[in-house]
Image (cartoon, rainbow, N blue to C red; front, side):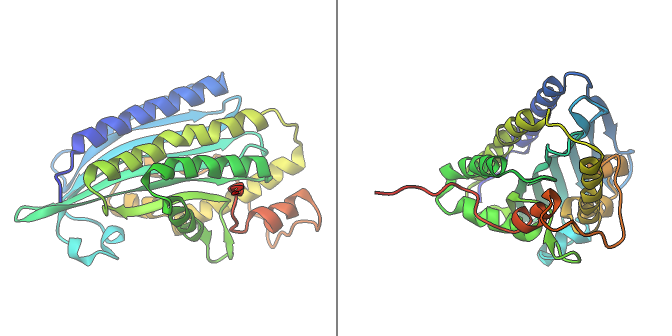
Length: 312
């Protein structure tokens, strides 16, 4: 297996963080990111640091968090070795960019993206490395145009790497972002991949970059189309209610959250993905035929969003 270039990966991730922050600031036009650099205390079994960038109370975005982290440790936590017991006892490095955008307008979907690189090393053995990540969309009021665009960009990110890559990682995303206790998906999906090392390092790294680079291409046109849509108290309350599902998923199922907490990560950075305001309501059900019911009936069901290809 070829030797991975950790520094090359880190430089890309830092550049991606800044690119996304600049694009979001420009679109918001009001708020700016507060960047909080942090380092672990020396002498512990865990090392590393990161940059947490958070935008709050903007014109378009109620809260946006774009986090870079580079964490090292003597051994991987249980969340990382549960399916890979052969990695137990290895030293590790984990680096990545993770972001969640919570807009003000309920007609603008929440979006999430994450790309990451893990390497586990032992002095007398070859390093084991893999890439992971993806992006997914969580609308409150579904829109076919937005869904088709989102998945078109996901497909374009995957296309240079094989005809079956998009379908494989779309299906994985649908399966991963599923709240089992609610029996419903978190949103309309996108891409999810993990443990990627089936290709040589450079190709795997290129794929991670393609996913990272297509995030803004997928999300920003949707923001621009929906940011000025009129809404009222009903739509806002529904947005806050549906945000509760986001919290439930992140705290119960999300691998990144569990890994960060189990590895002794920085809690403020790990939990910055949670929305600033949220509400739960006992046994709430949408009114039949309402716009809220359409979200459940049409959009919160795995489906194909790519436009069919017309073949002769």
